[in-house]
Image (cartoon, rainbow, N blue to C red; front, side, top):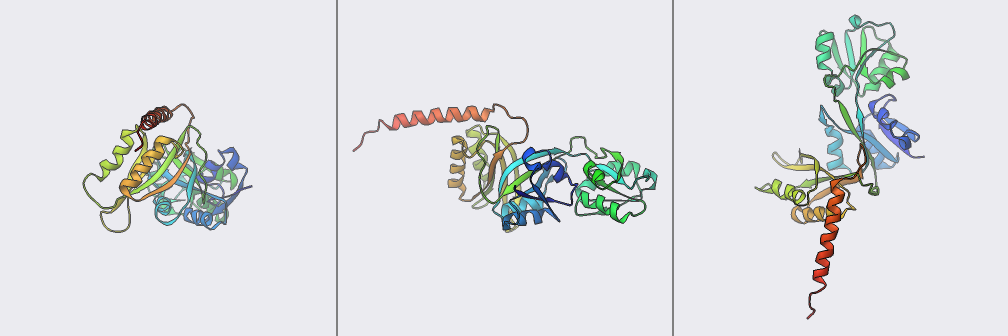
Length: 308
């Protein structure tokens, strides 16, 4: 049974996301203090795979995780899981909303509930914790007066606390994208896949962005993410984080990455893996069939070249 590291303690959104996957739910779960600890434990072989948050629909990328994958590690993404995030205000049983003077949680969770705090708890002190579940556990164990936590319904149940208010996030479409990462191996194509790469520039010059985007446009490859990150080598030096529909096993994807590598000289491959969401027939697959037919046509023409 694989050992999976995740941001602990039990009751985090990461664990909620893990439990949505039948095969991951029955594995051995190893809680870690931080998501960087998760990545380091996976790289060292302390666990088989790690499960970390990569981006949120409201807060954007989880930059410590993304930067570690780009610059510090050699882990490959094995799968993505998208979880609808419902924030809950959690306190000791019998606590009323009017009694809450402090709210504890991880900073992004507190940020996602700003309108609720302004409306319902304008004078409450906001206190940072390492995770939502750690905040809930703190209340259960230390039982501080007038203190609540922002966390999951799972954590409230695990630690015997009460939900004072549910769905307190400011935006209704609040989702977090988690990824399963491992030291090696690329999952087989499923027909509904994502490939993640990092493109580095040889030098900052006009046309670099067009050079990259044109490779995808020419092949009608759909990009689901295209964002820049500083390379940490100097002001104005950026790399590009790209997610695209398709798998490295697809000929059109392989050809695109081959050309990019030849033009740029430096590409980091983060993985080809099953996409979250409904599986179906994608235009990407149609393009692969067209590409294979074009290959056959070229091969037929080349076979007619006379030998000297």
